[in-house]
Length: 119
Image (cartoon, rainbow, N blue to C red; front, side):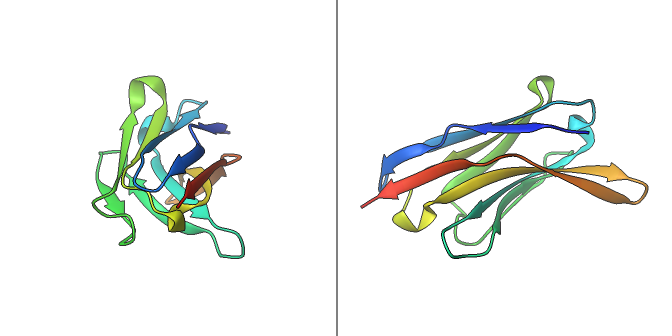
């Protein structure tokens, strides 16, 4: 079982920056792929960024060059640095852990943190 707690959301003006944090409980963090998703009102949840257990990263095209995902295994934490924010980035941001299990993985979600970008 993994418990995830996000923090760092808030209200920011367009062009500003925020840093989201996700802290995980449990012993499997270091072997887990960690993800940031977001869901805007009336829209489906979408994958924003991924970081593997080895540190490989991938991003949605809409955030490439603006967002950076990183992890700190010693603290069981994953971060999302968001720069040059736009109003379209407004959403609830969720952390997800993909914990390996017999060739597949279990997915654990956090409760989400609201990010609002004003014009």
